[in-house]
Image (cartoon, rainbow, N blue to C red; front, top):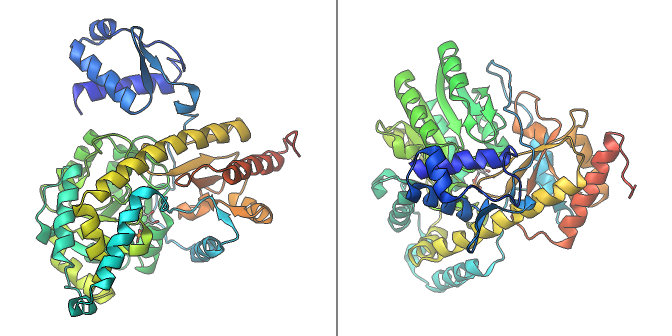
Length: 477
Ligand SMILES: Cc1ncc(COP(=O)(O)O)c(C=O)c1O
């Protein structure tokens, strides 16, 4: 981390902890430089970073101020404390229920993990799709190669330089979504009964892969701002034969944190020392609010032990089912697993996506989306703060579009969902994000879509139902 980034982090922490309040004037550049014994330009860079992140604002001839309350972190979650033993995962029934509820178009699915797909910056994609489908070339009606379209892989290698990965396109294999990339990665590095370490909470889709492969999941305590505790992981490594670690370190689902660079570097050192594989899920990484986007764990890997997985499902659209993996030293095994899984992907969609990236539409699109998601995050946090009980805790996402909320422990959010069905909307209940039955009182909300009056109303009703569940009826009850 550079000096100005470290200073910006320190200030952010002070703001989040209430040391500086919304609207407060921050110390002058000269004063900061003296206090922190850094150069004037370091302070200027740090303040500019806070401005980019919309944490501070500059007022002409006056200085830097903390932004208004809506942009300041809410009461943060505590570090999770999962059970310290590997467990079998079940919960398939709960997940099927969740998936079915998402298919019901009469229900407003507030917990769904889908991006905003109706903006103008995605329109060029429709043109590309129709151009490619009009082009009646027989090559489009055949199998793609096992490794996947070279044109697309070249574009992906270019995109990955933004997370500081310098890869040749032959080190990349395309997949049917990130789910297949993760599934083939797990198969490439584990065998039945192996222990795989995961974050706590974790995305339910990947936990189902663990379940289906007969692996045991070991949940590692996870900090809502920095990710898995490396100390806890190290202790677990002493105790259990961990074969692989599966993490989403950049714009995590569901917590939205970005693991700091020095943690990513330390994690690689741990993996090298203890000889385990890292499956890095970077599906939300390009949606980080910081610019340039954070580095990936893969970018620190010198031994080829990181299997980097991603897709266009969260950044562009899940409809394309276009993902990829850079499996490092496991590439041959990975290709075999892909062959067993789908043999090869489709030809048309990757071509359209490759062109979308090559023509610069992808970069324009994610720039617009990041700004929209950041605005929506603050609006949603403000709404939740206004309508939910005071004792809730929330994540403070640094990218993506998912908010994690922890309610009073007496509330079971799966039960809450049954009540919400009457009002025509649903949330993602916390229980599906863990194997250890720890997050029954938590929920996940999506803020990718515009915060419309219908969404505002749903959040208000959600707040009323929660108040009623803990025995605090609101005036609207
Ligand atoms: C963290 C994470 N990884 C992987 C996936 C699966 O991605 P895809 O739709 O590209 O298969 C999802 C989808 O929700 C996700 O949230």
